[in-house]
Length: 339
Length: 254
Image 1 (cartoon, each protein chain N blue to C red):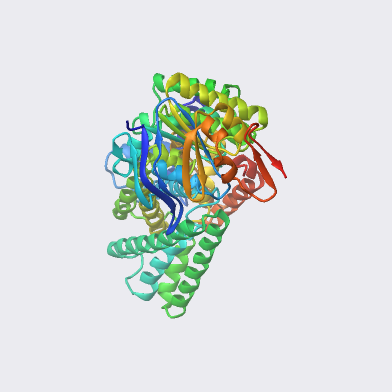
Image 2: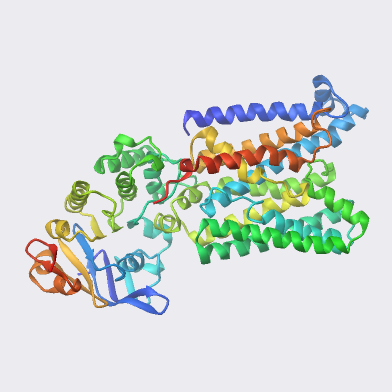
């Protein structure tokens, strides 16, 4: 790995740790750093401080880091798979598909929303089915059309279709269920309590390990499927693995945190800019770290008292993410010069 | 004698439409072979089928003694490298890393390069004169330079067979001859088998050992001398108003 990549990784690790610590300190109640450490590693006193740190802020910070990494990995996997710099879980309708699955369960079937653990798990399953269905459609469209722009448009259309169906469910749902769904749709890292954390962390960590496991075939796929096959990659199984991992990551994060915009699409570009490379052995770890850092940063912004209190997470990720995407389009020659 | 790569009654094409039928060809060690034919005659399809990327519509392709569809992708990749027409769109990949992708069949799970791998990469870049821009990104190169990089990638794969689909398409006349000659030297000096499709008949007649000519949905095979003296090139390129001159290898407007 080149020196630049090591420096990037070290800087991101330091930034991530600092943001993580800030996360534990900042909130409605400000907690000093020594008290945070005491709450984390000290005796098992059940003071209110240690309770806040352990059962509210720690899960939230872990959720933010995992969700950020997960969505970023998702974005990079899709950008490489479809060889399209504008691919991402929210753009290609994966988040919408997951939302549709969640809406079906939250609005049409009264499962009690996010109140019960069983409810959350079934939401995950619903989101997974929804996003895999969309991903299947997108891959079919990619096969038939083999055109980047057409693929993006199909993704958008699927997104609209899902939103329309969700509206149909919303009309006939109860006020309570509707409120829960709308709040979920704004995106948040706060909904994951300690007892549910494992259900988020398990699949996401599995997906992240899978993403790192695939760096070599991902590199080969950058040159296209024919070149990949000719250099020894079993293309179809690899595509399937990428698909399963992408679906798992996008749906798990969406089920627990809502459909979060732009993180998946924008983070790989930030990572490319930082390490100046498309080599996945470098880019994948940098992207994962970058995703965690960006998610922690966005979440911290809306937690800062007076500055961003009350702003939905999705608004912040869009405010930061949309310019990145615009910049990618603006400097399109960096990514590719077409023949 | 069986060649490195051979076919028996092979038919290639897409779906039900057969582009070329009854192909019995054989590629031997140390020869440079040109695949010639008009646009749309099925040259690319044949190359894709020979490399195992497309299934044959009939007949078989043998890589040494094994039918090609019985081999796994990684086993094929150690026997045969491929250069496709056009340049892949990869933005931020520097040339050395891209050429290094050719080492994939030989590296471990994460693709870490050993010192031997690095040596092969440098060697391949030296042979294609791409060392000068080793640290540039592929997107910053001219079409000709990018094409040479893709050839370097195939050389780094270090296979006994290399198939190239119109590798000269984007090169100017001088570079075309230089690349052509380096491929011939490679075939003759290191015993590699190189099959390339090209429209540059003149250079091919000068430098290639043998010819495969697609004509009337069949494949004619013969030496360069036979191609020059016989009627095959005239027939394969019989188009109204154009005449082939076998002495110069050039086409003339009639």
